[in-house]
Length: 609
Image (cartoon, rainbow, N blue to C red; front, side, top):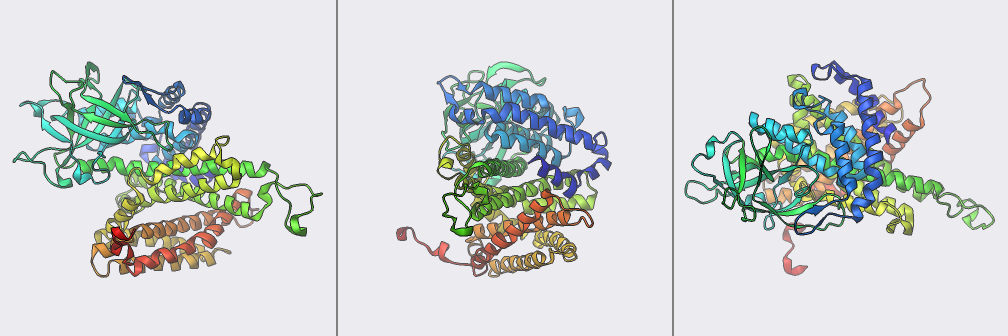
């Protein structure tokens, strides 16, 4: 993996060009390498050896506290000590001012070693980054800074038992806490009552405090909640109350663990049902969890999506690295496992020695599919991270383009790896044969852990609705047009490189097909017709994007005239060819139902099932 990571960073994305920007002027190619080396070592020493332990000794609640293996405590302490929680933050926030793309690459090692143990850090970083964008100076200093330092960890509390992804149906309520609620230096102070479900990292003793970011509704002037998402606000609700210096006051907030969710995979991260304001821990003699408003009333969802979008790219990276772990495990197994004989001569001569299964064409196909999925997915996540750097440090025009592309690509960055790197894990099990279905090999856990990624931070269906319903039509389709411009630039370059003209032609046709299907889906202007097949659209869109990225990577691999091609470059070109031969043709069926606005999903009736 490290060779591919370095290849993408330096040969393809050319991250050294970022060193010319003032924000990164203190760094060098050597410091980037040192960060990656350090994270690779910590992941190898503190995370990977205990990944199975975190799965078999999943969190348990004894009625008083949640217990985690000591290895999880040690791993998170090592992560905190590395400074990676604040890797991309300003120096005055305790950060290193690293580019986002380097931060993402470094975190890849932790996701690969133990995605569940690393989940606490991803949530904390996203929580604190949201407060940096939308919190007050005091909130940033008290809450975000302590999270970046690893003194406290954070969560995001959106879903509820009755609401799930339907956030407009959030029932948690927030009422002003006393007549002086506006005067609290930590922010307007409210009392929250309600229940939140599926809260990762919602209870533990890894740190001295947990900072919950909670969506709740403030009643209107008539005392009734404002309907829909317009009434949703965002609140900081710490597990333990703090003062303006970030010191614990010694008082527990009225947030209680109602239970743990026991999951198929991802067991190393606690997943909780939390009760806010039930009176188990009354504050100053009153029931109600104390929370501090972030931003303005009614803007909670807009603020929360700052964290959600960052988390979606993080989920995509986690899915990629679980796929990568399975790929490497099955590749190693295929090289060592002798079984069968060459097809040449009938393959039935028992006097011949058996060959490693990697010599069989079908096993090679499965390994090549995994390679195309996981390396393509890694390219996607790093490209998005590079766009984040452009958004924050590029000139005005470049930043605007980066922001537009991120809007369009974020649903793909979350959804595509969560589907196709899960498929890579399935193929890894298949390469192992019956052994892959046992707990003697790690590939079954990789599959179980990865299966969550199609669900959390927005299911496949939600990502499809977001993409087709909003992202490709916003601002007159400017995002789709800009993406097409980037793809066409790659096509222009590929047309002049030997061996790449044919895939370039295939991608050009796919891009035209995608545009035509998008227009056809919305041709009647009826959302129900356009969006009934949003998920097949998402799948086709993702495959077009990945085909583009693979062609762009292939340009780097092929553009070395006069030099002997390395095995690494040969591998990249082979993965590209696989994607074009076996994957890109899938879009015909997906876009077919989109273009004709296939009515079957809408017309199907409950009784017919």
